[in-house]
Length: 233
Image 1 (cartoon, one colour):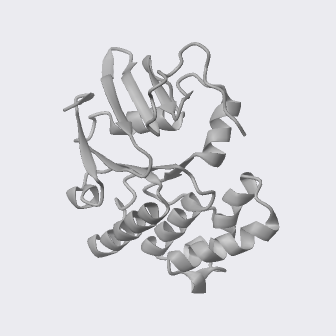
Image 2 (cartoon, rainbow, N blue to C red; image 1 turned 180 degrees about the vertical axis):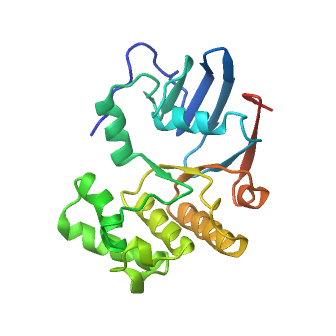
């Protein structure tokens, strides 16, 4: 599906970054959560965002995913502005361009590991003939082929997060937004999960925006942004 830029503001003709945030600001009442935040992410680049609790990391992630809207500023995926895009445009982007990995996995408990991954492909309109080999390839990539028919309540935290990573990669997005993906895992399992995420995004040339408190997690990225009191430092 070809997505049209919002007519109110068009990206400059030389803008070629995968994601661009221009002067984003967000307040809740009298509290200024983000102030003039600008950065870009190139195709295939891995970028970490670090900062103390309350610095605005979650708010920024919500803006980039289209869950919330900034008070001012603009966000582009390629040349499509998502800042005030209609739900139809945002949903199309989530089916084709963007995927999200959460700290607490959010696997559907009534579906098996295989079915949790396949559901993303069903939503994206991928045919049954294509879905099966793609899901099997992803299960092999995250080393959980033997757990294909397991339900989430029988998986460990590390196994659940690997299935969540496979699900996020299923529709071959251009950008993954990851919110503390190892925050609920022990250090050894977390590092294995980070290494897997790094290798899969690198091999697939997928950009990664990783929100984290952990310097070890940030180390798998190409560069790190620091957010303090709502401003990039």
